[in-house]
Length: 392
Image (cartoon, rainbow, N blue to C red; front, side, top):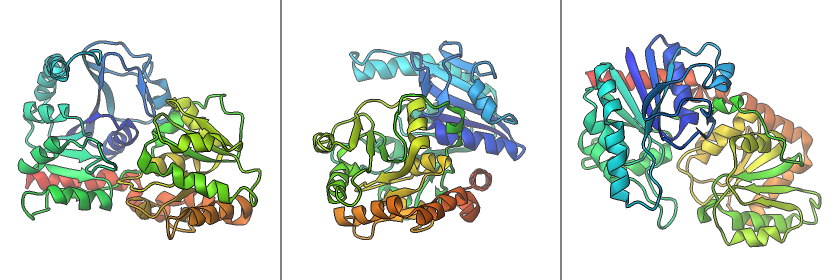
């Protein structure tokens, strides 16, 4: 089967999908949609590549780090660039330039006569791409289908377009599967498929920076938003001041939350309130002892699939997809009551009992073996099954 995987964001999960689909003997072309200004994004550095509008095939010289991790990669990797406009332009002007600048690339994609296409992402531009691509066997993967907090924008028009046109949709957790069915026009759910993603192994292509002078700390990282529970973390750390007086905690990521000021007042908390580069993200994970996710909601498990690559156990609230990928006392700890006291107990367990910690770390190392639904080979097989169901 000749397959195109077209992703707007999420290279950490879409690149492995393309790689493992190709390992199954399919002819796979991967296209990463980006603007003419971007040079790298999560777990994908293409700064050495030529900058031009349209399609650029990336060779080993362009993305040496990826080829170093996947020496046997059989998929062909491309950039699909559109023209970048400053944020000062009106949204409709930016959308117009996006569409005009990618139209020649979409014609090329149609000329390549793919048997199947998997589009990935939430951006509204993907609705336009769907409308322009003439392949009959198209499916779409969505990472976010419901808001986590008031004011978060979810692409309702894209979701409704996919459902009303009976385009098969893949979501990556049972939490997302339940959420997307609230959009359903009818009760028929045969075109909604739940397929998880595996470990974000492309992070192994990133060299760690030398910016983090600490080790064995508790790590919170990612975009800082109110629903991610930093206030809960602050209160738990206050409880632990006497029991774990030497515990270091790093909070790393851009964004705003009232809890940041309180966390800065704790002398054992290091707050890095800025964009975290790929290199810093890798080093933060490598030097951490455990990861904490005190979220109020979680539609999927990107942080988990990143940190598991570095064999780090996760402490998380019992919400959303965390309960699907974290097995309590096996590869991490799930809070029973989601209270500061409960979180403090979990942190204390990991940082005071080395034998218990070693058990959790071994559980992380065995994650894909013990839970084969998260093995990329099985994920590729399930994706092919969705393509085949579209042809019936």
